[in-house]
Image 1 (cartoon, rainbow, N blue to C red):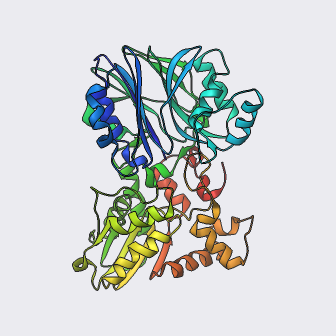
Image 2 (cartoon, rainbow, N blue to C red):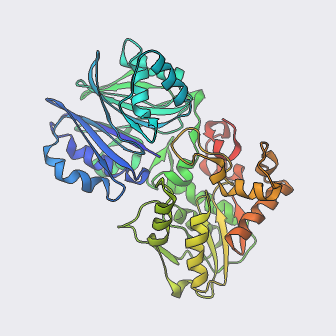
Image 3 (spheres, rainbow, N blue to C red):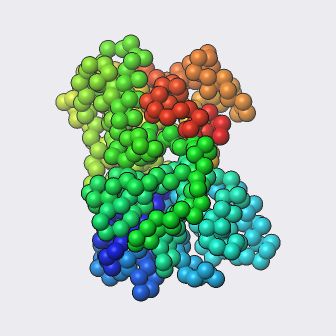
Length: 464
C-alpha cells in the first residue's frame, strides 16, 4: 500500500501543512516516507520509517525545509524521485503497481535507457514511471502515454517549479482528491487529512484525469472517464482510515454496514462482539448494533508502538508486530461466547497464532470469527500487496482439499457451492475456532453502496 499527498500554498512555508498531510497517511505504509518541496530551489528528503513514525523522522528537518509547494508519499519504495529533464527539474510521487514492469524495463534497456534506483533486483517503479513519461513532448502527454503502456494502476503527483500535476490512475482504483482552504490547494489519497487543516473537498479526480494546480487555480489538462471507474473495494474494508471517504462514501459507515450484514445472516447467540484492532472494530460495532449485543474490547492494541502487521515485507517482522501489539483483557474474555470481527483473512497465520491464541489462553468459552469480506483468492494486481497465491489461506485450503494446485477455483469462489463450504470448514478447523463465516460478496457490495461494476473485486473474483 502507498499514499500520496501534496500542497500548493500562498504562504512560503507549505511544510506547515505538508508535514501533517503526511502524518495523516502514515497508516498506509511502513517502509519509506518522503517529501519534496519547491521554492527558491527544489529539495527532497526520504526516510526509512520501518522503526519509527513518519513525523518523528522529519521533525528535525521541519524548520529547514522551505517552499510554497510540495509533494510527499508513504510508500513501499523510496520516493519522491528527483528528475532533471528537458522539461526542467521535477519530483515524482506515485501510488500503485505495474505488473508488466519487466517487459517495459527491457524495452527501455533496448533503447539505451538505464536505471539508477534498483532494490532487490527490481527497478524502482517510480523511476520506471518517470522514464515512460519523458517519452513524450510534455508532462501531461507523457502521463497519458504511461497509462497506455502499463498493466496495473498508477496515480501520481509531479512537482514542478510552477505547480503540481495530479493524475488518478486510469481505472480509479485508488482515490485522488483535491481540497481547498484560504491558503491554497491540497491533493491527497486520504480525505482524513483535510478537516484538521481546514481543507474542504473541491474535487475528486476521475479515472485517467490530469490536472495542474498552482496557488490560484485548478486547470484540467485531460478529462477523466467516469465509466472506467473500478474503485478498490478493499479501501473501505481494510486499508482506508475510518474518517476518510472515497466517491463520497465514508469508510467507518461502510464497515458498520458490513457488520450489520454479518449479524443479519447469523443465527448464533454470542455474549459480546469484538473487533480485531484497528480496522475490525467498526465491523464489530456494526455487528453489535445489528444483533443488539454489547460491543466489548477483549483485545486492545498498543497503538503508540505498533502499526499494521500486514504491511512489513518480512514474515518474522509481521509475526513480531502481531504478537506484541495486541494485549488481552482476561476479565472480559473469561467464560464468554465471543464474536470476533475481522476485516479480512489473508495468510491467517497471525490470527491463528497470536490473536485467537490469546483469547483461548484467557478462557474464552467460544470464538466465532466473522469476516467482513469474502475469502481472498487472488493477489492484488493494482497495488503493492500480497504477491503470491500460495500465501493466501483460502488457496492453502483448496490445495489441501484437492491434494494439488488447481487453475479453476470458480467452485470455491461461489458461496453457494459445496466446495466453498468445504473450504470455509477447512479454514475454521485450521484456525481452531468454534465457527467461521465470511461476508457474501453481494452483501459487501451493498454495504459499500456503489454499483458492483464500479468496484474492483479482483482479489475475491479474479475478474478485472
